[in-house]
Length: 99
Image (cartoon, rainbow, N blue to C red; front, side, top):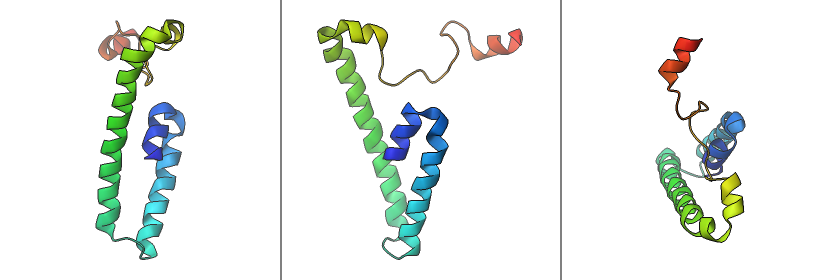
């Protein structure tokens, strides 16, 4: 699912991709090309498949690429960035206390 990958890798523009994906899904239902259940099932199946593929790519990056290209892995230790933008040692609660 392109919208999910773009949301994971380009967080700032993620909402735009989901709007476009929702518009395409609605158009498929509106034009009678698919039943609503087809569209909803496809969203869940594609999301699961996308997350599995990204997990597999991350595993390959950690296990195989780190051995063959250590200088690149040193600059980019993970394919998918951290969820939180806070440094790993500072929790969100501590960050709120400092503000």
